[in-house]
Each structure stands twice: as structure tokens, then as C-alpha cells.
Image (tube, rainbow over the protein chains, first blue to last red):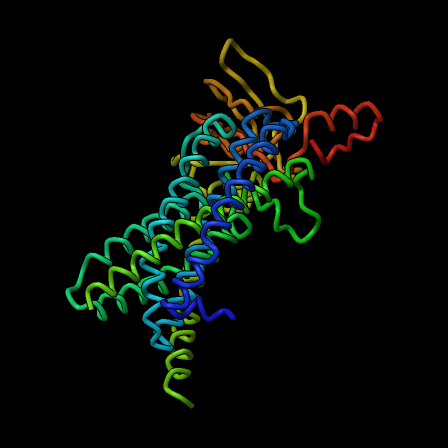
Length: 231
Length: 146
């Protein structure tokens, strides 16, 4: 059933099947999401600037999720010698980098009016900046080494080392005093976002994820076809 | 045990050890990683008065006074200890009494800081502005909402 996640030809078949409906569905979710964001109320403290959240949070979430997926595929690729996992890693690394950049830019645009500064070197902001640099190194590493197998293994090991950053990003706001506020949605007690703001946020997270999936499908397919033509 | 599971265990163990090593480093350098000290931490720790320092906490209610056009004095508190802040400049939008803030500057003594920068800190609570009005009208506005 889930074979398409590890088998290239099954992946192409599966993606051809779902691609068109997926694009339509994504457009629909995105439009609904934007509509809800437009209708969402102003914050009692932050006013209109709170709407930056609907871009910032989905970007941050995807930046971390994509890296987590790359970590899992690196483990699978290295341990079970599955070459398709390296294809996926190569295809989705730039997507993660873009979402990390989007998170950093929207975050600093949010920080300027609210905190009074574009950037500070607190633990959360610094660890996300490191994540962005790690993504860039991964992308550049794919341009190195003549031998493809050596290259892919090296990158996979580098991805694994970089994955240590993920828990640091997540828990940085709890472990240390930071300017960035702690998590709102994933609190163990009830979420501290009002439902009228949580709903558009969740829809936007879904919309961003779907867009990421669409780009990922296109890139993975292209990568598979390139490799086939080289054989 | 098959070769692939040996590799899997090797990878997971390596990650675990690397992660543990990094955590040890991070928690032992906690002093350098925190963005600010609270007023209590300032009193308890041996912090030199010469260097720039950041202190964070809540802005004490009815402590903000305007000295001149853009010179302010207010108190930062963590509900145990407090610190008097002098600041010349523009305050951020979110700056108000009861709200969290971080100030950066040079300590005059352990109770008085001349700030060169003030950051407002916002918490993880989000609420529509209309609800605040409703709550206030029904006298259900609680202090912890701030």
C-alpha cells in the first residue's frame, strides 16, 4: 500500500494518479485558508500584525517537518541501502531551505513591530538560522564528489548530524530564556490560541503542506527521470 | 542479526551519543545561551557590572514615568525582585505596563540599569480583540490575561 514511498516506479505511477486532484484540492484549501485569514479577528495585543503568524507558523512547521523526513530517509537509505531515499533527500532539501528562509523573513518582519528589532541572537532564532545554513550545506554537498554513491552517503551522514538541531529548535524556548515566546499550539494544556484564530492557522498549515507535497512530487519525479536517462 | 539491522543500530546509537554530548555542552554553557537574566538571577549570580547585559521580566504596573519627551524610567520585575530601568529612545509598540520586556544596557548597580535597547516580549496567548471587550464588559477579565 505504502510501497510508493520507497519504490521509484511505484512512486511515478502513484504521483501521476493523484497529481491533478491534488493540485485542485490544494488550490481549494489555499483559497479557503486565505479567506479565513482575511476574516480572522485582530489580536487583543498585537492588532493586525498577528496575521503574519499565518505565514510564519506554517513555514516554520514545514522547515522542521521536511528536515525530519530527510532524517528518516537518511537512516533508511544508509541502513537498508535504499537508493530511492537519497533521491527524495536531494529533491526535498531545497524545499525545506525555502520554507526556512520564509520563516526567518516573516519572523523578522513580525519581530520589528512587536519586539522592536529585526533580529536578536536568542536561542530560538539562532537555532533556526543554523537550520537554514545546514540546508544550504546539504544543497551544496550534492554538487561535490564525482562518485554518486560516495556523495549520497556523505550527505546522508551530514543530514543525520544536522538532525540534532531539531530538538534544540523545538525546546529552545523552554530550556533557555528567549525573546521568542513559547509554543502555542502544542502546549499540553489547552492551546492558547482562540479557536477563531486557530482554525485559519490549521487550514494554512494544511495548505502550505499540500504545496510542499506538490513541489516535492514534481522534483522527485524529475530526479527519477534524470537518473533513468543517465543509465 | 542481519547486516541491515546492525547498521540501523549503529546509526541510532551514534545519533544518541552525539545528541547526549551536545546536550551536555549546551546545558553547561547555559549562562552564555540565555538571552536575558531575570532580576532574581541577577542578584543571585556573580555578574560583572562593566559589560553589557540583558535583563528580562514584566514591566511593573504603574512604574512607567516619562522624564522628558523620550526619556523613560520603569521597573522590570519577576514578582520577586525588581530593577529600575532608565531608557532614552523609542519604545516598541507592544511595550506597556504588565507586559514582558527585555532591556539591554549597562548596570549602574544591581538595582539600576541604563538601557540602550528595549525589546517587548509577547507571550503565547492569542485572543481576538472583540473578546477582550466582551470579557471586560462582563467583569470576567482575569488579571493573568494581562
